Structure formats: C-alpha cells, structure tokens
Image (cartoon, rainbow over all chains, first blue to last red; front, side, top):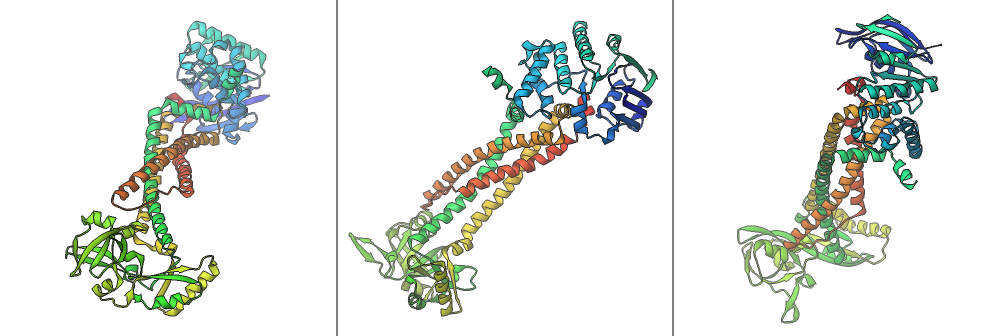
Length: 218
Length: 379
C-alpha cells in the first residue's frame, strides 16, 4: 500500500536554483528507504518537503492518502512524523531527558508520564547515566541518540533522518546504526534516510539515488 | 523515588523559567524598566488620591454634606451669593447647621497673591489662643496656615499689606486640609470690605441632620435651589471631582499611567522580539517536533506574564515608596496628607500587568509563528 506518493515534484529557490526537478516516486508503508547522493543532490530538500517544513514549487505530494496541503501541519508533525537532524538540534541548556520530554508536550498532558516515557527510551539507547546531563556536555554520538529518542518518542508512522551519521565519528555512527536497525526491526514504521554513507544505506530495504535534484535510479 | 517524581515535574512553566534564567540580565532590565514605569504612574495617581482623601477628611471634619455656591461659575472661587441666604437654608427641614465663607485672592505687599478666607466672627476658625484664653480676631488681624507661612517666609508678628490694607499675623491655624494650609484666615466683614463684597460670601457649607436618607438629601438640595435661581448645590464629592488642582494631578497621573503602560508594552514587546529572534532555532525545533501555534503563543504569553507580573509586584513597591516620598515632601511644605493605598490601585496594577503581558506578547507571537522551520534550522 502506497504511503508516500510524489508526482512531478519540483522545488526551485528564488526562481533560479532548482533543488528538485520533476521527481516522482512512491514509498509503501513499512519500507525503509535510503536516499543516496552527493551534496546538493536534493536529498535534504526532499525530506523537508515530506516533513512539511518546505513547500514544493510544483507537483503533488500525498502522504497516507492525503495531499500534504490537506494535512493540519501541527497534527501531521505531532502524530505522523519524527525527524532526526544531522546537527541534532537539541536545546543545549536542557538535560537529555528534558529534550525528549519536549516532544511529548503536545501529546501528553501528564508531566510524570512524559518523564517516565522519555527516561525509558533513553535507557533503551544506553543513556541511563546521562538522563540529567545538559546535552551540551554530551558527545556527538550521545547527542544523536538523544535526538533519535526525541524523534520516535511519539511513535511516528514515518521516521525521517537527514544525514544522521554526518556529524559522528565511526564508532558513534556504528552505535547509531545499531540503534536504527533495532528500531526498524522492532517497529513496522516507515523510514527514509538521506545519506551519502553507504553503510547507512545497507540497513534500508530500498535505495533511491538522487543527482542534481533528480531521482536517477530507484 | 521522591527525587525522581520531583524531577519529573517539568512543564511549560519550568521551560519558561529556564529561558528566563538563561538570559537573566535581559529579563532583569525588562522587569526593572516596567516596574519603574508602573511605579512612577502609581506614585502620581496615589498622590492625587491621597490629596483628594485629605480634602475629604477636611470637609468631613467640618461636617459638610452640601456646598452652596453661585451657579454657572467655572472657577468656584469667583462665586458670590448673599449672606442672608444662610438663614433661609437653615430654616429648611433636615438642615442642622450652615457655615458661610468668603474666599478671594488678595495682593500681598503689591508683590504676590495669596488666597484669603473670611469667616464670620462667631466661627472658631477666626479664634485663637492669646494669654491662655480663646479670643476672636480683631479687625486688622489675620491667622496664617503653615504652608502659606513656609512658602512666603512669614511668621507671627509680621505685618502684611493686603489690597492696601494693613494686617498683622497673630497666630498660625491648624488646617483641615492642604488647600487651607496655604491660605490666610480673617474676619468675614474685613474681607468683605477689602473685596467690595459687603453682604456676600463664596460658599455656604451645609451640614444635614444625622441619619438623613439620600431621598431626603435630594429634597433638601431641591429646596435650596428653589431659594434663588442663581444657586447651585453640590455634594463634597461632586465639588472635589471638579476641583482643578486634584483634577489636574489625577489627569496627569492617568496620562502617565496610560503612557507608561504603552511604554511597558513596547519594552516587553522589544525584549520578547529580541528573545524570539535569538531563539529562532529553538522555536523552529518546537515547530518541527509538533508544537502547535497555540503552544508557541502560550510559551511567549507565559514568559511575558512572568516578566509583567514580577514587574507589577516591584512596581507596586516602587510606587508605594514613591508615594511616601512624594507625600513626605508635601508635608515639609506644611501640607497635611494621608497616604492612601487602595484595593482599586492594586486592581489597576494587576490589570496593567495583564494588558502589558497580552499586548506585549502580540508582536513576538506573530514573529515566532512566521519563522520558517527549514531556514531557521539551517542557520
């Protein structure tokens, strides 16, 4: 069953720079997809479009049977997707557990429940002894695992990851890949990972190559 | 377990306090600016209300219920009515006593003007202590209020030339209110002669029988106005509402209050726009992880509320201190005043804080909701 449908999607910045050109593809629910390609190939733009952070210049983008424009953006981001950023985008002055709790603010009214869910998840990724440490004092790998917990704490149907290992050393990358693999095997959710790291692509069931804003092979 | 539960209570409030703690200097400056603005306004309004309250006390000490004067006079001090009307008023049912007063501004030593009250010689206002006995002012003698003496550097024994008549200050009098403290008292017949107002007075103060109802008060008022079409009858509250000095201070206070509230809105708005601008990335993260527009707005509103509420408390303390300083300064001039801090002032302060928080949050909210997620996260 098609979960994400892109039809002739183009994205042009300032009327000149073409980030995506006439991209069409479909992704089924439960698929894990790697978007491979060099820098500037349009991988991040494609993820941002799917996440609703950006709007396509032309084309049709449907998610779960509905055009992205028909989705309430807040509900969509809150209940449907989780996003893992290359730069982590954590609030450095807050502890690891607080950062994860923030994602639960819109969905869980009970502060105790927020704390318990977040702590449990951080424990699962091996950060039990880092719960109350401000994220600015964590290593890159630890920070990315906190960001990962934040992205999945609401149990999204679609996990988007933009160069998740891009800022990590090889050991941290390996740990994160293990975490992602475990997540994939234990959940039936859909995942799209933008990467230029073939090791990341290996954990995915399908690879889509992008070049100069076009999907050159799927 | 306890520490775990305590640790888990992290909500919007904690997040806001964390934000404020991250930028303590900015928050302090915002709070202090708003507190000073609100405190200054409170001092002005408080001073005006304290002066009014002092006036009320003065009239209450004379048991004045109604004031009779000439109608259609913009400045009540220019009112002139016949002294004989006092007797007609006294004859009305419900009237317990009347007091006549002639007030006029006289030229002192051809140099400056001073307000002079002329009282009938039977009144205690023109009596003073001499050699242990209470005596009535003689012709050519005057009493002086402490403020008038202080401001004009006069004291007992000094001679004054008033409208070319020679007068001697024989004593000070204790003023019932701050206006009276700045005037001279003399015999009514002396003042009538000096001002060519023989048989005339400015006001007739009317004291009504104890326990009189509002309905009966209206009847008495109507009966007094029936004596002559030139008569106007007002209550002391109505007279004070029209009083030019207290109206001016009150008006100024309200202008300062409103302009300071607007200023505070601008301050909090500017600080919050700066704060939102600095936290573009943070707000973009909130939006990216699913926070609704309402939750982002609530975050900004709560932060402005914390700042405004803290400023309102500080402003209250600053305003109260300013009021005490202002009134003590007036008291050095011999003006008796009583500090008045009312529930109404506290309500105004709370309302001001709410207004500042809501209006001050509007622009930052607009700005925050228009942050582009992908652009902010790319910075």
